[in-house]
Length: 180
Image (cartoon, helix red, strand yellow):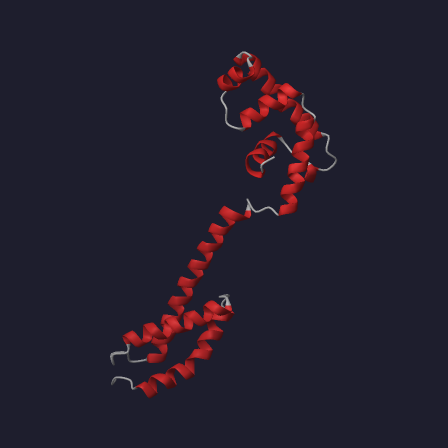
């Protein structure tokens, strides 16, 4: 087969671009990306159009199939990444405000010494550092932290619905990430 002329290439693009776009779109590829895939398919074909291809249409659709598989892999990888990194940590502003309010109310119900030691621990201070700062022994600090945890669990269990439940880990997480 001889080399293709620009007129033949234009005819090939006109004959297949709409079909390729429909193929990509109906395969679940977003519309904008489908157009990019059509263009990429023709780019690969034009680089290979050297006269050695016997069935150009079959070759074109083979390229399209490969591009579709690559796009699906890319989209799947993106979705997996997005779900694993963002979906679990995505909270709305109202959810953050609600959680911050519940944490503040919960912390206010602890006695002063428990709250102080618990918040120091949330800040990352060691038992020894808390003991030095509060002028208490390490055993006392450990006991007061355990009491704070028990009180937080008890107060949290008083909530009416499981959706409103908040635990020690939620309090610590909220303190660190929401700036409570």
